[in-house]
Length: 570
Image 1 (cartoon, rainbow, N blue to C red):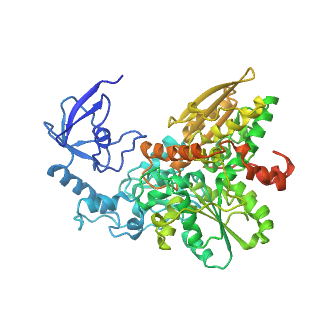
Image 2 (tube, one colour):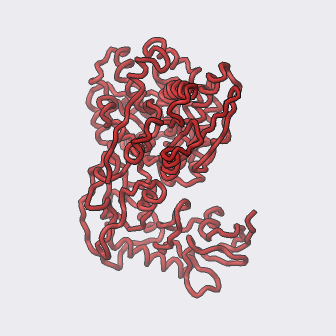
Image 3 (tube, rainbow, N blue to C red):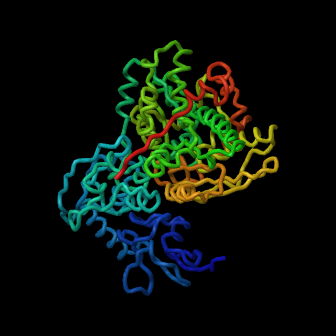
């Protein structure tokens, strides 16, 4: 157990643990210290100097992100000396940044504007070099604008150290230093896997999602038949765009809002999650019994899929061939539902509401083209509703539409790391045991550890499972598989920290505490459901009976499965 340390912050007695920094103890006690380069999951740099504080007895200000707490330490986070230093450092950052930048002011997560307002900065004493570099619009998912970059390096560290993708880095030297892909490449031609974790990490509007809001507004006014689907995690995060606490479910209000702005049908991607589980469990049970191509890896995450195609194509026989829940519902909307509604597929505009910037890339994969038309992230949906003057908080609840609106608790937990595996086990274990077990929850694979393991014993046979989130952890697993050293039978991989609740299209911030609250909201949805196993979903079973045929059968395979491609990267 770590040694307890007592200290004072702003004359308040607080307690921390040996090895903690000032900023961590302050935040835990509700004291916010401005910062740019600090991130709880990354190495501490102390580079931006915005988090400086006054420590009694010290001969200079201390960067709170790197300064360890000590017994009896007295800290003033907002002394006149600290505030003046912050203003000075912030003005230096603003000298190379458009202070009146409209996209920064509109971007809810731009801390540069937030801190400038808090520190009452109205004029800039310094004049920097005007850059005027054209934004990189090449990616289908991410927009990069170096004129708004403050070189905090958070995006670089998350891309290189946590995701191990190395799509961007510091290029050039001195005043010409900038963040970009190497060798003069644009984002589209780099090794970027579209996960958007750089967007989540960016404290300004230098990196944002590639917005499709205007396209959707145009579609809503086109006279066409508008359909949308919403991913599991959206119901636990959309409320944050309207000032609600993290983890506040807004499912019914979200459905009402989408209908109010003009969508004819609002379907639930959770049904796609249930169908995905039925197909993946069918595939896993078959592989496990035949002891073939194990471990099997889940394939709901498009950023992980692209990562695998780029770096581990030789091992993709381990990946399930099942589509993601988004792609499953998209396929059914343009086939099953179109026929049922008497509509031509080309007359239906399908908009997917997703937590993930990589979903914008996924709908353009060759095998999925012509199904979903646009993807809006959670942040974009919040923006769209505000543009359309919809006050989410005042709306009444309404239900998803049938025939693609009924889901189980298993579908709901897809939005958190471990949720796909837990949902799959609820079905696969029942099938392997050949009975309806009472066991539903698998606590060993819940939580925020980036690698979680468990071992099950089914009819005398052991099944070793593993759940990882972030692609650095995925790389370690894939290196084990490539070396023939993997002990696992079944693996879940999510690209983003926390899973979809921490996706590149979610509201900021996405720290561990907030992600845990979002995940708990999804578990609460699961617990309230009367049906909590995917293979018990009556709507899904009716779809198979009426349209898809056998689980894992020929027609189901055609509509619900996919293939993978070797991708070159630099």
